[in-house]
Length: 203
Picture 1 (spheres, rainbow, N blue to C red):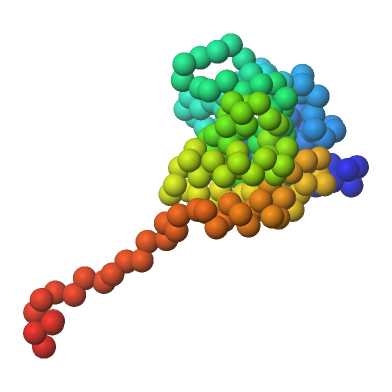
Picture 2: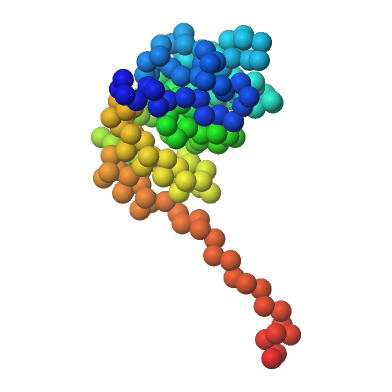
C-alpha cells in the first residue's frame, strides 16, 4: 500500500486539483473520516471523507452532490447503512484518486449514481455489498435497479473493481457472479440500419 500512495492524486479536471493542494493526495488509504476531499478556491473545506454528502460544486462550477445515504433521511435518496456507505466512499474515492482517476465531474456523478443503486439494494436487503457474491438471489436483482442503457458500462466498472480488490480491501462481485450478471443483462448495443431511399431501391 505504501508503494501505491505516491501514485495516487486527484485526477479531476479542475484548477483546484494541484499537487500542493491539501486534498490532492490522501496520506493513507482509505483516508480518515476527517480528511478533506473537496476544498474551494478560498481554502475552505467543503466536504470531508466521512460526510454523508460530498459537494463537488467547486470542481463542477454548478451544484453537484454525492449523497452516500448515511445522513439524515430524505425522500429523494434511499438510505444506506454506514457500513455500506463507507464501502461506497472507498470506491468513489478510488475513482477520484486512483492511478486512473476520473477527470470529469460528470463521469464521477454518473458512476456514483449507478453504483449507489447497487448499494441501496444491498442496504435494503440487509447485507454488505462486499458480501453480494454470497447472495446470488440478491445479485440477480441488479439489472432491476440499473439504468439499462448503462448496464454494460456498469459491468465493466465492476470488473475493474474486481481487479483492484487487493487495493480496495474488498470486492463487490467475484468472477462467477460477474459472469452470471453479464448473462442476465439486456444487450443495448443498437444496430443502426442504414436508410436507403426508395429511389435507390428502384435502381
